[in-house]
Length: 206
Image (tube, rainbow, N blue to C red; front, side):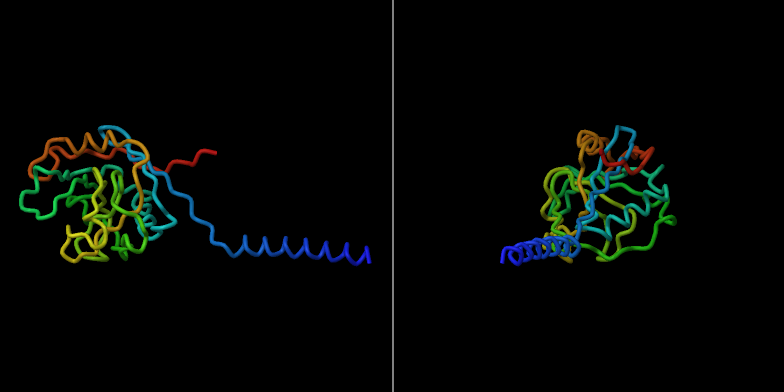
């Protein structure tokens, strides 16, 4: 009887071990955030891109980054209280990317991952994709200065109500974002634009 009891205990332990292993295999593993550094004329902006919750939008941004297309691009637009007098809903952002001068280099547009799908909201320091209509975002992006709930799905900045596709946040360098936001503008165009000298992935600390 003692031998049988011992064998049953061993079998029970094996079952538990196998069950734990099966759960480990079956449970999805969240993708680690991708850390990106944009080196601008006014300093570095370090971004954490959420590849887990916004995989398509993150992959799209990284297409431009890895191809070197953001080198020589710029932040060219700053939107704040004083330069959107005709807007019923006002926001505060800086916008960057290839701009009109390099539009021919832009890659194909992507499907929009809205905030209702990803759960990523437009809070202070959020990076998101600029667009015209849904599913039209290419290589232009913006960073929120302060919380911008009207840019979430259901918000009223765009009449279609779909909002924008947030995909990460500023980890460090909000002082640089603020400095860009305060730079001289003509209407909403930065004069001059703030050039992006370098753009690269940064390894995760061990």
